[in-house]
Length: 247
Image (cartoon, rainbow, N blue to C red; front, side):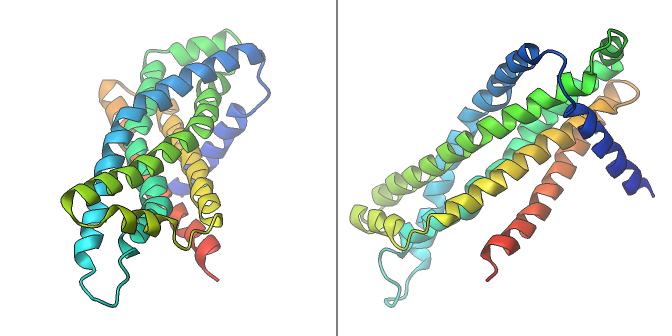
């Protein structure tokens, strides 16, 4: 029955987090702070990983297509499809679950064990709303921009590394990333991003909010947040892939 206990407590916490705020201006300032804390600070690692992964995918695709029956533009096409459909929305979200999720769980968990959350409750402040809602709202706002940047840098990195290594020509690559483009695939990717953004922040906040004990338990909550967020990301990625791509 323990899973049902956690599921029920999670939804009760989310109900509190999304209840009407007492002072909207305070929440807005918190959202802006969290956009910088969650999103902007994650940009360097996302940029580095995206550029190199784009290059790796391009080179592997180029040297994997040895058959004369495979068209030359398949390298660019494969790179685009891999980055747009799976790498940027899913793999980058898993990376963000490790970076952002652990940070959120540690921050809220530290506030719990130092009784700062209890102090907020005593002052009549909805601690769940004040601490959790701005994080969820900020992630829903900034994550799509981060993933869009990841997609652009991944394709750009594939171009430069593919051409410079001789894996493909500039014309072949550019023709490939334009070939058979379907706009609905972007809707699919960004739908996944919004779902993953909510999962990462809400699940991490849950584990942090209900931390008990001391510093050791804060570390355990942080680890649990990353593990369960990653599992749920893969689970919902499978569900959304079946919904969008199964015809």
